[in-house]
Image: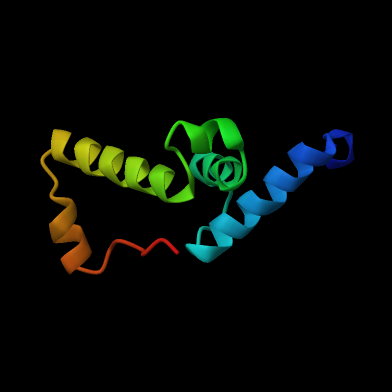
Length: 86
């Protein structure tokens, strides 16, 4: 099925695999695809969602989601449960 993707779509998937590998993820999630697109997609970059901007947005959303259920992301980081993003 991968061969049916366009050249650009295959490039995004390959970059998403690398994004997942960099953070030690066993699978490719939506965030890895978004990071792969943000790495080289001018409309996102122009909107301020370059690779680093997407990481900041994902981190902020994670913090907000954890806070909504009463979990402190800082406490998780201190305990070593949070993997660093590359």
